[in-house]
Image (cartoon, rainbow, N blue to C red; front, top):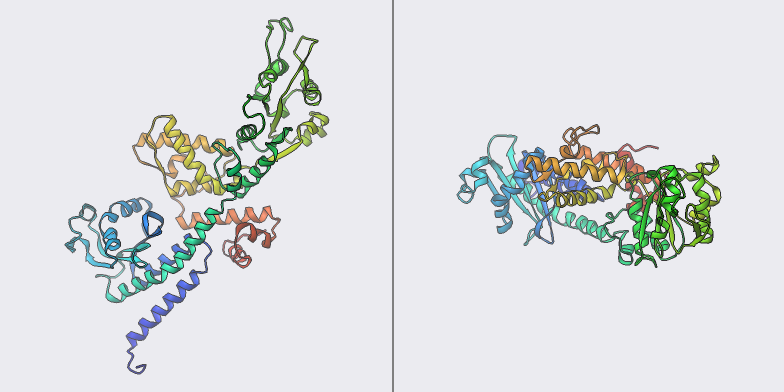
Amino acid sequence: MVEDTTPEEVDRIRVERDLYQRLLELGREAELDPFLREALALVVGLTGARQGYLELFQDGQGPPRWWISHGFREEQIGEVRSNISNSIIAKALATGNTIVTPSAMLDPHLSQADSIVLKKIDAVLCAPIGQTPPIGVLYLQGRERPGLFDRAERRLAELFASHLAPLAGRLISEVESRREADPTAPYRRILDLGAVIGRSHALATVLKHISLAAPVDVGVLLTGDNGTGKSQLAEVIHANGPRSSRPFVEVNCGAIPTDLIESELFGCVEGAYTGARDRLGRVAAAEGGTLFLDEIAEIPHEAQSKLLQLLQKKTYHRLGSIEPQTANIRVIAASNADLPAAVRDKSFREDLFYRLNVLHIRVPPLAQRREDIPLLTRHFCTAASRRHGLPELEVSRGAELAAATSPWPGNIRQLEHACEVAVVRAAAEGTDTIEARHLFPDRTVPDAKALTFQEATRQFQAEFLRRALDENDWNVAKTAEQLDLARSYVYTLMHTLEVER
């Protein structure tokens, strides 16, 4: 039989063997997206197609959960997903058979479909992925050479689809298991977190500290950059503590004039100063509950001694009064300043610092929570649409990726503002999708349109890996454990992504 094998058959066997071996090599990928991207590029090249599209379903049903394209422009993907899926892709999925046609206009089953009439697509090959029911579909369009997809190319596409199914299925299972292993889940079960969005390890660490601090009626000091959500987390601590049914009173110490801070906090009696009227302060308003002192480093030195008395003795004096008042409150403070440095230069009392810093929680910047950015972006866009009475818009993958790879020096507050403005811009255009250009109209960071999807993904992976290595002092073993990756794969990523210390 071997002697009767023709050169053409030998070539065919070699190509099919190489296809299988290459897929097995790609199957060692730990992440689904890079695997699908490389696999699709492989089959597009082998079949001589100009463009390719691949989508996978969860449990073989429902809308596609994963999709990737090759050779299509971003604006063409919507047409492929919405228009063509009503005809060619739908037929391949419904019948479980491969569709090959030299021109969709000549196929009697497809020629009446509006999308085909409008787009006049030719040279189509569409193969279901997996057995009945299929878990996805491979769509190839156009050819580098004249003519239709031939029998050999059809066979390659079908072999590809059959080999891809188990490899992709394994990665899908791993993706789903990682999603189920949300590090914030244990704390979401025991805490009322309100609108706290995210599932990153950095956020999980914060929630762990909150779960310890909330039920203990002692002072808490929240530190971190502006816009990281310290006020929101202070409310979470209050809502999950023993004083949750009592008032939560917030005071921004940096927004109150220096000469009014004492009366604002402690109240005053009539005549205490020119024009003063008898009034209660924020401490009295928080009686039985929680007083949150934001930007505590801005409180003037004169008022610090009175605040120290409040914390030590649970008593205070209204401005202009000699009669002591008692206070039953919990104090939570927050600062974006370097309080130990302020203590060293004598602008902040050391004894007050230690009274406030009973339990310390550091709130990470958004740069350390990049995996939360897509979730936050969708949340803020939806909230802005509802707040302004606008239609709820989808956030494109390009917009999510652009947001996730962009610097946010203003942290969550800056992202929320950008999302609100993006919603207004997109709604004014009459579009149903928020794109990167709506988030970054005067972009100073690399534009998603200037980058390919692969380039932007590579940039994100490199930044994410470098941050994880930094957090673990470049200990590869610890980094691999944190990221749930094999140590050898982390070394491979470092080499491939050119991540160096």
